[in-house]
Image 1 (spheres, rainbow, N blue to C red):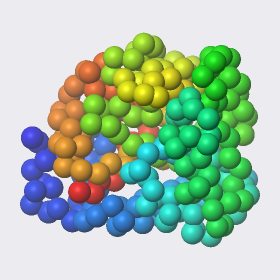
Image 2 (cartoon, helix red, strand yellow):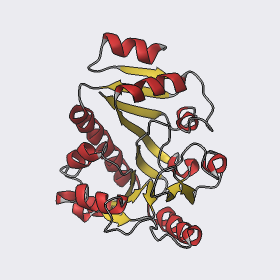
Image 3 (cartoon, rainbow, N blue to C red):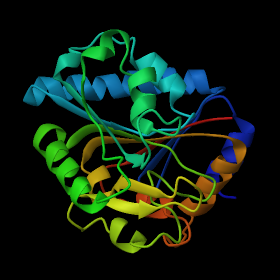
Image 4 (tube, one colour):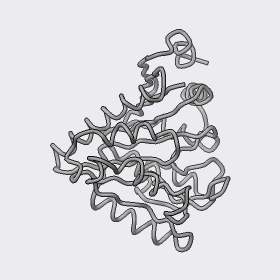
Length: 251
C-alpha cells in the first residue's frame, strides 16, 4: 500500500504525511476532522481579507462536508467580505433535494455565515455552456483566485463533477487550461452538471480534500503512488505543483 496505508494502520487517530505535494492528516472521526478543517479554512479566509479586503471560498455538495459546514458557520468572521461559491452543481431546480446551492444555503450560510456573498453556479438544464461562462465571469470578478477550496472525492476518484469517462474530462483536468466553469456529465442521474475545471480549482491559496471511509483512504494511497487521471481524476489533483493538496480524512 505504501506510506499512507501502512502508517494509518499503526496510528489511526491523527497523522501528518507529505508525499508528492500531498499533506495527509487522519482523525478519529468526521467531527474532529471537520473542526480542524474549519479552523484552517477560517484562517485562510482571514488571511485573504487581511491582504485584499475580501476572501473567496469554493465548497462542494454532498453529505460529507455537512460537519464542516456546521463548524464553519459558527466561526466569527467578517462574513460580509467573504464570497462563497460551489465547486460544482447538479442541473436541477434549487428546490430539488439534489441541489448543491440549496444545501449550501441551508447548511453553511446560516448564523454568522449568513452574511456571506453567495455566487451559485447555473442549474438550468438548457444552455449550460453560456450560463457556465457567465457564472465563471462573476466568480472571477468577485472571488478568484480563491483563498480556500474544499473538495470531496467519490469512490471512482472523481472530485467536483469531474467524473472518469465524462466527455471533456481531459480538457477539464488540464491544469494549464484557462480557468472556467464547464458543462460535464455524471454517470448517474442527475447526469447534467456544471463544474469548475482543475485550473479554476487550483487557483487558490489553500486546497483541501475532505474524505471519509477506509476505501477512500486506500484509493488516495494507491493514486499517490502513480495513476492515470483518465481512470482516477483525483490523480490530476494530487500531482499539482501548487498548491499542496491538504487531505483531511476520517473513518
